[in-house]
Image (tube, rainbow, N blue to C red):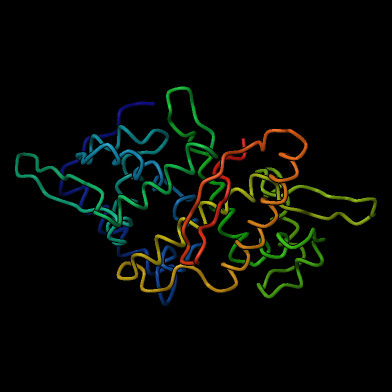
Length: 288
């Protein structure tokens, strides 16, 4: 990949600001990343957001330096998402005098630092990581699919029991049977769902270990939203979302106990995540 084209601070600012202004146009009410945890998952899965957050964990960077440290994305794409993250008050943008002028970005504290930590912990244990430590760019798209699965209510339904496409189409999400079937195909390819025939003719779907373990990220994002209401302006998780995490936690706990009783390794590490309940969730951070 060639070096990103050099831009002046004014050009970078124009791209970031135009992205910022275009964001809310996607909804008559609010930007996608402000629509709860699913919106944040889509933001992380749609572009350079995750790599930007992880790159800035080491410290502030000039925009040009940052573009070189976000592999797989054009510099203009990086600048566009810098604007989105600045709007969320996750990043702070500072101008540096000179010719040409320079722009420096850093994670805000504690808001940006905490979000970057949640994303980093999940990405390094659940996404595809190269030998040099970089996350493969296309693997971030898993989070966009996860956001759709969570927002539609299908994750919650599948966390209770396996379902057919017909059963999933009956949920209150406004999707047709054919739209559900297409989504299931994408989710099968990505490894978030699996077929569970169980001796029946109709194809049934269930959540994979990868999907179940992704609840660590969902819980982490919920905690982050709860701690920073001035940024999002809404509670961290709805009652239905918290109940779904409880069900997944119970399923995973039973599996861990069963494996330990058999003398087998659990197959994944576990990490406690406080979610506002009296007891923290203990959810696996890795499904590998």
